[in-house]
Length: 181
Image (cartoon, one colour):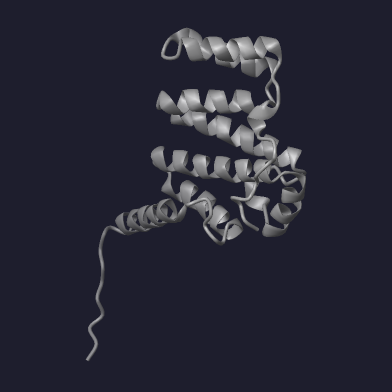
């Protein structure tokens, strides 16, 4: 399955929001950096909590404000909602390649969105100092995207190295060499 092949399919942002939410998103964009922007985004979320456009706006707000914990919560919400819309397990750990084979028949763009949200959440965990949590998610993506069409190779390698480094440090950083003849 080619995760880059989704031409002609509607994207999450093609789904209309209510006029009220549209106004709130516009207001938030117009006053980005001010406290009122977050208030507008949260109000939009309370009105349409299952709309991916609202979740993406909220995620981006938190991400660019370096509020990675809140961005991670938002990404996890988007993952669960998208999985439910695709009739997939809402726990990303339970996803299998066969599940994606079925989900692309529903929507390739939503399937790709789900995997990109999982990638983003892994990156956030890495930024939050949880390379083991990040590695779990990167390994799930690698299992599902065997051609690395989503480009996680370097991030995956960095998470593996960080986990190995952490294990080495927990072991006291000692390496024992066994003398052989």
